[in-house]
Length: 242
Image: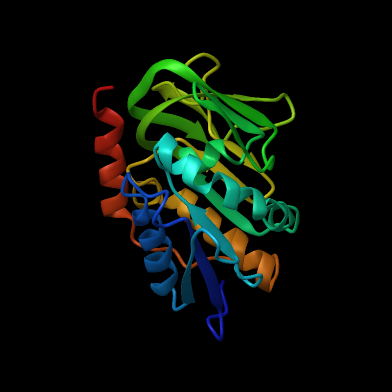
């Protein structure tokens, strides 16, 4: 079980203003609430364009945005590429949704030109002819993840990159190979909005556990919370039409 004495996680919301159009702040709120319910202290910070990412962060989150938002952050993101790559290699936890998920790959090829990524995931994204929109269910190690996708990009993972899940409803990464999202070490990427974590408590706790284990030791185990409401919301979402 978690030793509650002096347990603290520093959580950074990257590009809160520029990449946050689908209610993805709810993921921050879910992580914060689930940690505070266990008496784990949370320090929340934000990091925008021209801001330095604090070196002592434990979890980095960044949400979705339109292509225009990606263009706004692309130059700054390249400046941050090395520290994000180092965080990934060091096992710090990163969660990226939709637009920022795409930019964790090598590049996003749009009709206006390429948007360079940070190459944490071995993948590329290409703009498609139409948008992939609707409810998604994805089988994963962290339960049947539910969410809502709305993206024109088609993301293709290399053979070396593991998907976060396999879609049973929805398009997922590209509408072709049934993959959804990606995972590498403690970095997670996904197209699932909604927001993602309030309806997927197993994944939320996995993120918290990995951050605590990296910081305090591999024996960290979380106290179980009552997730009846979250599970009911997920069950309803799984039955919604595409």
